[in-house]
Image: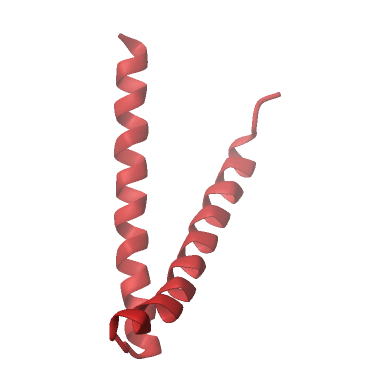
Length: 71
């Protein structure tokens, strides 16, 4: 069974939202273990940066594998 474009969009948005939330919660828990104490706003911003990098990485790898698969 194939996935509709609409469901693919819902999956992608859910994946990003869960990843962002998990990143922020992980930072809030783990950073103090290393003596880092960023504010909530800083944690949210840093989570956003990591999320953007993750999106770019995922897109680049997907396109790379698509190109390799066509050869």
